[in-house]
Image (cartoon, rainbow, N blue to C red):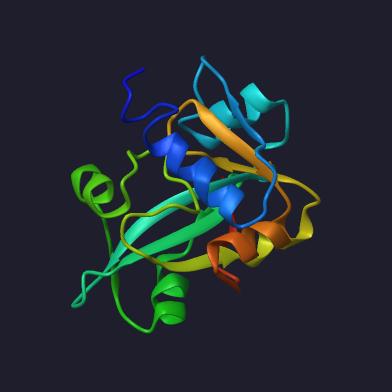
Length: 167
């Protein structure tokens, strides 16, 4: 693992953001990887639904990053995201995600972004007791509660999961 993604780089940025917000340092490393929700759930030993996946989109026109935090068991409804943001959105490529957030895809955390994103949290996450979110690399996650996740990220809780389409 290179320093940029490791403890001194993006993981360190997430750790600092958690501490600054008064959150316990619950970051754990899983060498087998946590790049996908399925990988993360397997590594942590939890349900896929408990993985708070971070997806980055771009608001058309402004180019502002939109961070969607959703249950690993759900697909995101892009029309619902656009309605919540009040602007059309588009998928962001990996290079833009890294440049804008400071994180590589697979390690995008809900905190510590280079550019402050608009943050939306899927209401489905709020029904869970505990969730795990990426902590700056495809091998690091941190444990928290949905309420803490909302507080830490400054996210707005909205129903953004596709209906009738699991996974």
